[in-house]
Image (tube, rainbow, N blue to C red; front, side, top):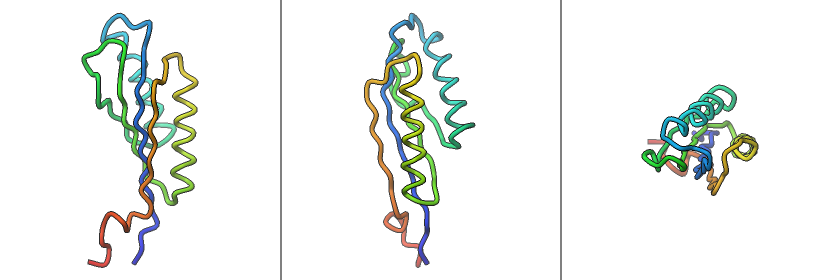
Length: 107
């Protein structure tokens, strides 16, 4: 039995040049989280620089029925990130396809 599924992962470093406090940084991150969850149906977590006022590292993970669908969604998320007021310092994208490579579904 094969599993037709792909996991997509996007790791982004964001810079908030006008932020003067952690509270000011949180507002755009909460907005981004809500868009990622609502529009893109993906998981979101701030995974780095939580105590830094002007930086954030975010991890976005999604599941898709094919590698093409995962890549398309990740591209849309990447375009969304770059269209915001904060700066995108770096984006790393990976997909795992097929999931059979991760688990033995025959066991």
